[in-house]
Image (cartoon, rainbow, N blue to C red; front, side):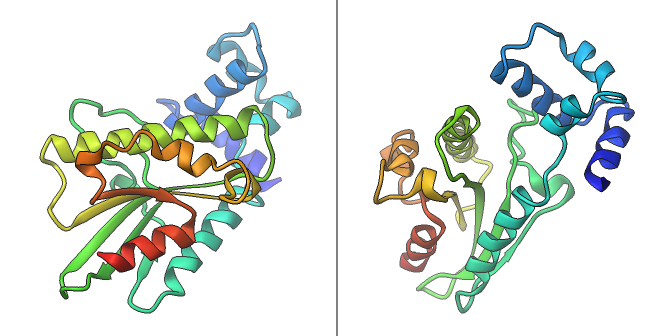
Length: 208
């Protein structure tokens, strides 16, 4: 009930929150709807089906994100947090949008004793499906933006970036979808950009 109430508050906000815009656009695309974003938005106050598709789902997203963050924090010397406000975005002036989201920031000290910061996008999916398949694209796009961020000179030398994909959908012993995501990492940035399961990301950070 709280998630529905929060959604209706979002829907009345001007300008419309980016999260909700993206959710509505994805819903229209994924379900082959013939309505516009404005028409979809007009249905939200009274249609619980339309609400359910785009409202936040703490039982899924927050639970898994918190579990992944806890996995980082279980490693001695790591401090992982869920960023808030402007810290949630990579500040890329040429791509100011909206899609530069960061799910996790990990602070740690590398093998030389230098304080480092890792910025990551985290995904969790169990089964095959349209939504799950989009997570591959979303994760690849995040890694592309990280490489752009580095190439533009915005990233400090102590910054590294990662994608973490967990759950049966990403499981490396089945169809290795994390490996598919990793194909977008340019060799020029492979020392600073990594993708894998949360456990593999931790192992990578420990090698730095």
